[in-house]
Image 1 (tube, rainbow, N blue to C red):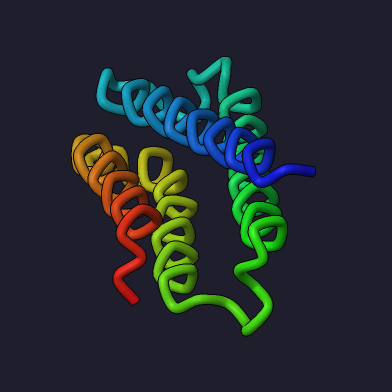
Image 2: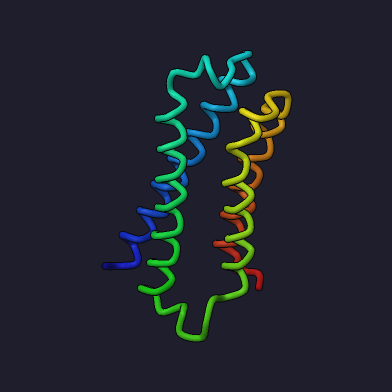
Length: 123
């Protein structure tokens, strides 16, 4: 497949992750609980599929663009760390609902940082 297809898969995964995270955080901010969240299963499935698509699209793009010939570039390690942090954010609104407002702020900041690292490739 072309690198552009992998980029689209990557972006689709990012959209799914942030949509799910925002929905779950907003539910908790509004006083919702794990038990009162009728869409929890859909949210967590979308989140998991999104994380998978991020990895599939990202590594597929690296391979298709020939960027993996000398091993993983340094900036990809930073991106993996960011996505691991974003992946862990899903638990916070359920386990610690009082941190949902923080998740609402931190998640987009991590997304912007990841986008900047992907564009600038600082290391």
